[in-house]
Image 1: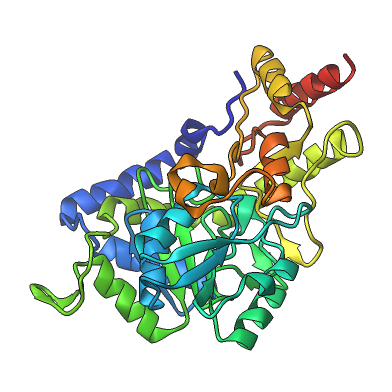
Image 2: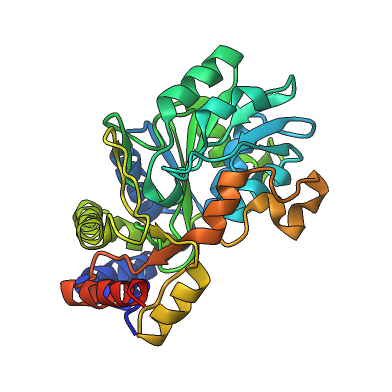
Length: 366
């Protein structure tokens, strides 16, 4: 099988460096936060063109703490998209706020700014755009709306490490940015991990406190916080991977360009990368009306694929209390029925891509 992602291949390419970094944490015994995490935070903040980065235990925790640091709570509303991983919406729910959905722009799969203002109410406190698949949302339009209405902007950049909008790195454009370091991400830990970025010192202070039981001094708790700290081993691994993030990102972009050239203009819809944005291709999702049959065909020919995501959040049973029904967000629903994610990872070989493309062509010619 051609894998959807190949973490073993990546590990083999950096094995000696990772092993040494992990052993360094074991020798120091700084297992939770500590110097390896602090060093990585400084690296990642600089990479994101942000003043601060705070490591946490998951991307979901990053979203949760960013919302709390921004003062979001019971009775508030946060505007986001239903075409995302459920963590985006769950984090809003954790705060006691209500998620309010706006449909996507079908070309970019990101929130459609033209529909945002109609969703604003007196209870709206923030907009939470998702840089889905690695392509930034239309941030100028979103920021303009937010400033006009006195709203905060919290970027879900879980799939968009290093992505850029008009030359600015995601995670530095809104008031806060949220990243995941789940192993399969463009920058992945060897376990769980996440980070919050910001240029606001008070937001940074609150996130640091909230991730560590609401304390700035041990056993002195000023806020009701959480145990959301990033482990030392993960900080060390991520620090090693920071040396390669640009190389890996350019490899992904090269693979995407090759996919575009080989399958674009045919039977499949290919990703539309906006000219003013740097797409980092965490996911390379094609579209086809007979997606499920296509996925089965590819599997039988040794090609692993994924679906991101088969059910938009507004139709998930977990959020049935929001009262949505099929047809409420048609672009999100159609995308959920049509998208298919092809193998995409930095170590993907041309001959592996050729197998994928040949199978796609054979299926379309049946």
